[in-house]
Length: 82
Image (cartoon, rainbow, N blue to C red; front, side, top):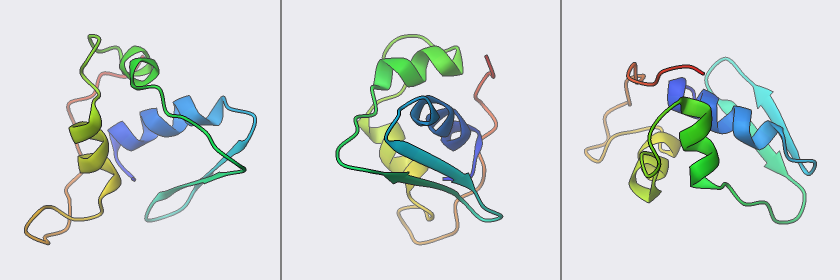
């Protein structure tokens, strides 16, 4: 999760009291105490996108370090920053 979408997800999660966000050279590490929920609508808002843009498929794509065929994932460049 070290791309523009991952940065937006980290920004949203950083606001939670029980979550620690640690930027590292190759990833953004997210650690939580107990349960925490990522509200997709919050990611839509933080990214400046329409409701429903961030969904389970987008989450899976951005949390995986590789593509479906095992190739390293390239950074996304389509997210508008708020």
